[in-house]
Image (tube, rainbow, N blue to C red; front, top):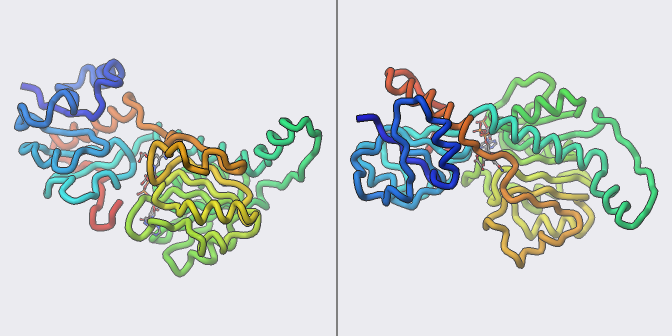
Length: 312
Ligand code: NAP
Ligand code: GLV
């Protein structure tokens, strides 16, 4: 009997998932169709996103849990993860490349004043705006992990003046490393374009707040592709409306889909994407799962493992 892998929302992309696991010795089943009761003891692995509370704990023989996303905040609620079952984060090239593309695009868009040119085009206004060299544009990345580190390196290659903020100090070529709460004020004060790629934890929640926004230079931009819980929406709107912030690009929101009544939808200096900065695609994420299951079967180390004590 082959081992069994349950995948959340498998049926929505069944052809892609089936192709991705073809030739690998595993039976793939859908999370919902499985019903989470019948044959629960047959399930060996689960690839999940926002599982219902307690659902994973009802799989008595679960060996590994895979997060469908890089973030594990969907698994940190009470009783979501049965004790002793390792949780593997989604870290793979395509997800990282997608986020690098998103960050480069949004940084370049603000850096080259594209929102203002688009606004002028709608008014048939022919007006050149100042062009600032990349080396004079200071980009600051909150979170210098897998995604933040890759984005920082790509921005350095374009000539930007890049700093990153993380819990522990980093050594990344061309990137100024700032670590811990003590260095946050200096990091914010030198940041013209702030990019959030932090995990959502009790320490990082609401980090894009009035006090921190006030420390950014006048006319700064904010790009949030971490989690909606990082940003205090009212504080961001106030900073945009006062003119302290020149623009924001938001991919994530405290409530998703973003509610129809949200003032963010219509704000002239806000651009919105529907949590699509970088997506987990079946082909590449299946390679990460297959690699880990192969290692696990051989008794080798798996990962990268989520650290629930740290919260990411
Ligand atoms: P990661 O490799 O774990 O990196 C997290 C970074 O945040 C690390 O540099 C870490 O510092 C830093 N950090 C954590 N807590 C901190 C704190 N209290 N103070 C300062 N720095 C702190 O995570 P990742 O793979 O880059 O993913 C980051 C996040 O991106 C995910 O958790 C998810 O929320 C988000 N994401 C969004 C999308 C999207 O489409 N919008 C897609 C994928 C991921 P250390 O290095 O010192 O530990
Ligand atoms: C998406 O938001 C992820 O965490 O990968």
